Image (cartoon, rainbow, N blue to C red; front, top):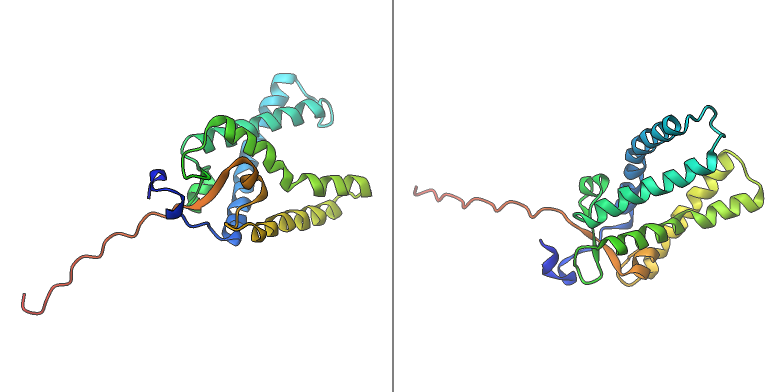
Length: 180
């Protein structure tokens, strides 16, 4: 299956599968964030976790942008998306450009911002924030059921879509007849 085959040739992966890929992406990003944090603290001579916190947050935002934009614009798949056979393409099935990937990255923060804002306004801390974030992410994912092609809101807005990218099964060998 190639991107030139057109969007009609693609199936949309189920929401549960996309959420499983989302969780796996988080596990993989733990390593990326740890290395980036170590690099930042080494380069800035950071001695305490709260020292230079805003700079670290901005640095992480840029590191994650580079990670996602590069993978989405070079093959349409992050490492987790490859494992789950999910690919990002434009609405018409073409590869995603870097500017479009950047817009998708920025819009994808919609997953978190409402829950983070609600937690901040309510003055929540610790485990309460985790619960609100989980409910917010699941609520956002559920919105995909309202879209005709089951795409997430940020994909619909920036003209991209997630598609099933499983390899075709190998052809079955012809059966031998009893006469042979």
